[in-house]
Amino acid sequence: MTQINRRNFNFSILSAATLVAGCGNGIGSGNPEVIDGQVQATLEDMFQNYPDTQDLAAKSNGMLVMPLVTKGGFLLGGSFGRGALLINNTVVDYYSATSGNVGLQIGGQQFAHVLFFMTEDALAGFRRSPGWVGGADVEYATPERGKSVRAQTLTSLAPVIGVVFAQSGLRLGATLEGTKYSRIIP
Image (tube, rainbow, N blue to C red; front, side, top):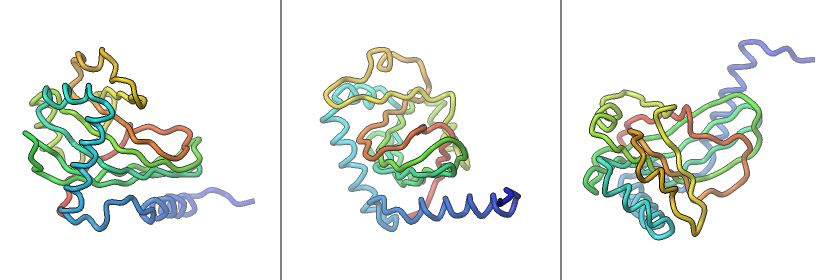
């Protein structure tokens, strides 16, 4: 019987991270033009399929658009994706989203998400942070195709609202909580 020790645990975490990093997530090598195209396509898809998100975009101070995040795991898991921060519909910075976790999980999933910064303070805090981690201060909305974002989400006083959509694959125990967003230079 194999004992779990620090060396085995670190190897397992490294293996899970390598597995996730090896998954093609459609963003390519981080080329800004590729990311910009994916961001615009993601926004068009979101606005077309979930029209209420246009109200969120209009009220927000900025949006972090993550076109495709690949998440997977078997007991150990992780995720990775790249996207862009838009202020006044202009790309101002590029970001990566990463997470790693241990727990009851199995499978893989790909999805897009947009974080709407509803206050100037929330946006400024995000931009100042060397590595902002999504947590309890983010209210998540997961609209179903053909349905609107909940009315209470549109009138929420939450500083950050996250909309998760375009999910594919099956993964038990999926969450964005604990995802770290870091500024990158593509």
